[in-house]
Length: 331
Image (cartoon, rainbow, N blue to C red; front, side):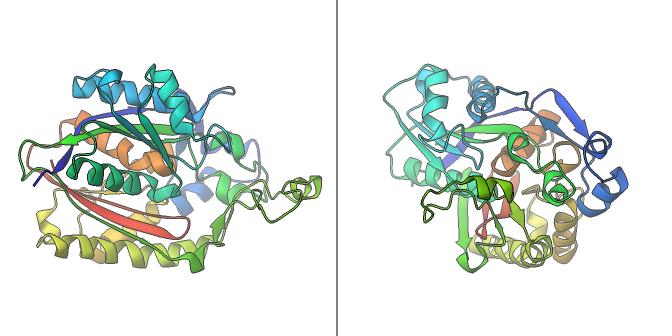
């Protein structure tokens, strides 16, 4: 059986650091208020004129370098984002163009915070059936352009940061190494709890001055409900992934959770009995980078030298839709 594994990892973060104190100068908030509710201390913002595909490009270049490959070695691109360069076409084609490659297929995946896991699952399937050999999977976000920097929007605005992470997925020579399984779920009854209203295609015209005046171009979230469901679904899908591979909690060397809220991750780790040092977090420095958060965590883990061949990693994510999932990887 062909198994897929990650051959290279890369990340890119804009240089501009935006602290909680910086945000407190823009709208009514405080460092203490933000840290108590989210765990976030700072996040990165891209400069004006920088596209999602620009961040994706830099992360992709680093992943290619890490894998010892060139752009022309890639035969398919999967890009996950909720902040595309444009409403259409997909951002993957812009990344392809900036990489200087043509003809290969490009796919955008719009599963928001679980976008990277869904993308990784698609890449895994393509590799397993022999359809492609080298797939570039990217999660990239430029949230900072589309947040409501007022008191009314602060609950969402304080959460998000910009960044990108990328991996190269290809066949594993060792059948015991690679992506062991991925488990994906969704429940559309929660779809309105975390969403962006402005692209309501039922409206004619679908964007009006009234909508803009009402602030519908900004994301809306019922935070308590997100927290309530997340702390239930995250442990559930982790247990599902473990059972599918006949593993126990203590068998996993590193848990890489999506970085939505430090409190969610700490609560989930406590429920599962996972030591905090194994349940990795970087939201304190980057905020919620949505589709980029998991590859960013993986890249940092590698850079630290903490990840060893044969280590077991469990990635887990939860987000808008609601969608959630988990993936078990033997490094």
